[in-house]
Length: 298
Image (cartoon, rainbow, N blue to C red):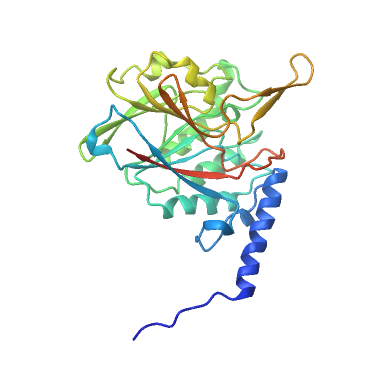
């Protein structure tokens, strides 16, 4: 017997639309709450969180790896402006996508004097499920805004990185790994952050064959300019939150347009993908929705 078709009520539609507007308003002002995500996991136009699908063409990888689905997220920024409940819903959405690989490109917290947010975010990302693993690089905020010197940063990072690794997220800090996918190798390289001086391409690419296309996880998209002599197929970044310009106080308040702010770029024959991130740091962002990206190797 055929089941009756369930019709969506006008009340249900208005409630979902109201959630979307609430999530969009809060996100634009710089705050991320669970209203940004459709709790039914239906996605689509009824939520502020956006899932983008992108074809990623890489020539120097085994042909059998074509069709591999990589889910990319960035800039969780757990803290006072980004709720753990919101991030939990975002990561639940990642799991519904059934990815082959998940990659994260830094800034898991914003400010964290006592380590509370670091412990929380490690637990959250530990819930991500992927067939061939979850891999992460680090962002400038992860080192601690007041602890960016080499003498201090290792202690600041140790707890969070250790907890992430224990939870099944492989943190790549200036190192590479060969991901085995049904007997075929896909190289991933994770960079330390450029701004804090923990960026070491020679160490990171030491084991990567020169004739392979590596997928590079590097928080700051400007690092692609420093990888010209490395076997790079694509650099996956975050950092910008979709903002087309940045502000500086170096010589008075000045505005500078960003070369790379969101989406796919071609830079010197290499590809760069800039993810807008899931979280915010309390600054208004117009026309920059939080993002989950599905990149399919072609």
